[in-house]
Image 1 (cartoon, rainbow, N blue to C red):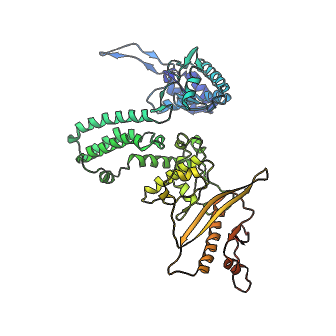
Image 2: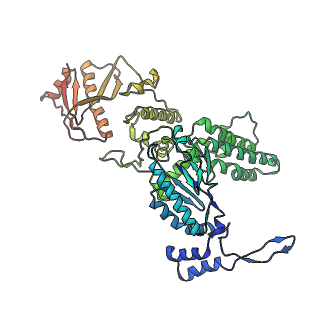
Image 3: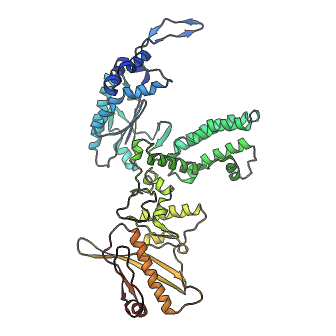
Length: 512
């Protein structure tokens, strides 16, 4: 649940004496510096000037100058005690100048949390009244995110000054329009409408402008709107972003003067303009870079976590990020914590060794989603994911047969299974992965191919052990070849039995 508080004439109602007292006792500004602020706020007058006739002067005892550099900073310092009041109730919040947002995560049956929110709103109202600030209940908005049945259930459950706050279908927050499904379709329509309006006006005067001046206008009135908070659109499908891409294409045509039937891709490349989808990816990666370098707000640093394996792996110094598990592939996958690892190919770097990939997920839907995203990401580089194997029938059925099978009549292969013992003393066996290779040419003898298959099985165990985050107690190999067992156990041969990375000896047994 999100609550957006609205203040009436917030900057104009700041009490100077309270602000100076807060600067001295809360912030710790004293002496000459405090006198500077006192001089900045005091002895201000206002008057009206109509048809050359000025009115009488009136002293200004409240408010901070709007449009000034110090105005928003002084107002933020004036609002500092409000944060302590909200924290006492355990409510999450963000404040930006006179915009205050309260948000609460809850399950449908946890309606007692709404009581805390209601009490918090009453305390906020009381604090603002004592500090000469006016909270406007009529413009305070509430939005419920979640399943549709929850919208009506939580509607009208929050009141402010006796006014029941109705859940809105969409709210505008810091220039971004949010809807209850977080699809951002309303925001995209608003941006498209505004950008096209300015682009039409630029088109009317394009012949009077040089290309350099026209490009400045396009960036100031069109590109700036396309790029504003565009990292929020990272989870949107391509059909939702299509209208924004059409705007960029139209802006490029207006700027370069090409015909509408000409291909737009080389034009965007000549202008060094990234397409909309990649501008979104770039902004997300830029935010991630700032987070990792300590240049972003603390609430963003809590979302992006560097990957630290619990044992030495070759990926520990690769700069990977933790990919959190999400309960819903739609909303959860749009979260900032999940997008950078996907865009930064963290999943590919961690789960792939050259052209072989191995990943483990808790849910089948998550595995299907990961495979589709991996396939799409590889397709952008003209690579094809053509072999898929899984121990889940649902995952295998989600992909066509030609994408998950590959066979050869003359080949070697190795298959790996994992056997685990649960707390009830029951054994569970599951397929992990398999690897096949075409037999080298010219054709080798069968005994030599059987030995090659044994080596392949050892290499397969090496890969699995290095990528799994659990400690293996034993590794056993099974073969139906007595020749392989003879080579391993015959002391007359100078064949040294290798060890796995955890120093577990390789034990081959005959499979009847």
